[in-house]
Image 1 (cartoon, one colour):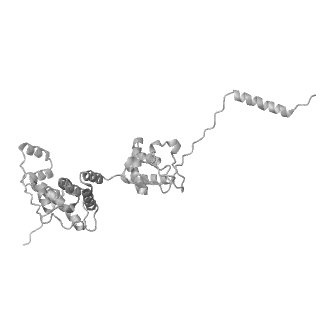
Image 2 (image 1 turned 90 degrees about the vertical axis):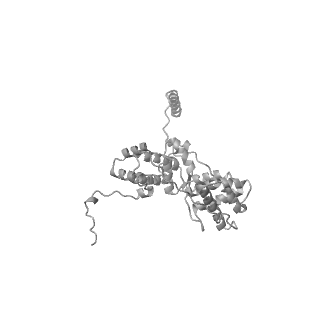
Length: 324
């Protein structure tokens, strides 16, 4: 009986089985769960600054809900929602926005407000999400304040040197300084709007405020009367007083120029149809009282705001007895 070569039979069987398996239905490769992409390894310095594009965020590839900063941010958002009574869908939008912004966050990263704005296209809440980041101390609010944008538009109408002097006055008046009381932005706007036509005219002749004379102030306000003249002089006086106090000018040309008084006129009487409509509207005792004080006695708004309606039980109290 011939001997059987076992090694040859093993090779033959392996080849045959492998050929049959290859000719049959191929096996389905095992499912591989993608790991979140780490945008920056914690502790590793960034190679170069780059603006993130959060619109390219995909939940399957980039989401990392275990990021420590993201976990802290969602806890802050939950507390804000409870304290302010936000609806559930607002909190969901904030959490989704935080997932986009903080899945790849590394210690020391600062997120600019301008980079958050595009996530509005993804349906996320921008304002409240930015508020959460601000509470965590990782927000860079790089928005241009409306006052600064408004001021720059006004300054473009002046020569560069004169514009720099006006900008210094306006910003110091808004922020306050060692010798300057802080004013509201509305006050600075009113001052500059009133003085701007005169400043534009001076820009055609002068480069600095120190070139302006007392006669220039009088000439600029000659054609003005009433409230317009008063506002222009108040605005110009604020500008020159500031630069005189800062040592930029030798003298203030607005000194001893009277702003004048504004003539007050009596209020016009109501027309019959207006009075009739107001009477129909006055359906409560308090409204009738306000109407009588306004239409008959011409009470001022400040007086009316100071009125307090009597409490219901006040009429049961006995009036104090007069001293004999």
